[in-house]
Length: 143
Image 1 (tube, rainbow, N blue to C red):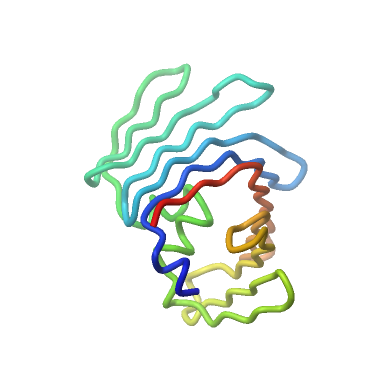
Image 2: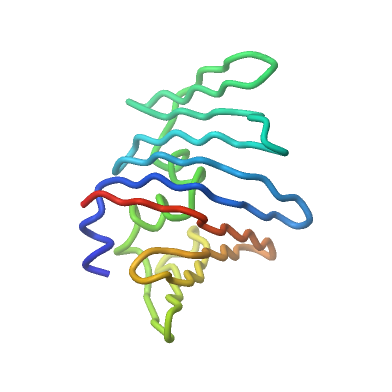
């Protein structure tokens, strides 16, 4: 976990599965609260969310929306960003190439992180009966 504590930023290409829906995302994250997420379906961008300096900008085909943002909004956009921002809030168990992160407080989800070396290959998020699977096709970090 000390390596993850040293990560300051990352970029990733992800495939996200929620139920029977699948979409692609491109993420750029800088600790603790700067993130950009572009979501794609069938190769076409459907939305872009940018959070920086407490402001969230959502760009869709219907227009641009600007909202106030908190660290919770940042954490909601990507599970690895949420994990990095809350590392000390989990009890961590390692089994082979998998980390199980169980929250010390009830408001956070449980994460199962399948590793490719030191970085996530797949993150499975479980909370209140909902399961979300995020596969990392490419991830690059800066420490």
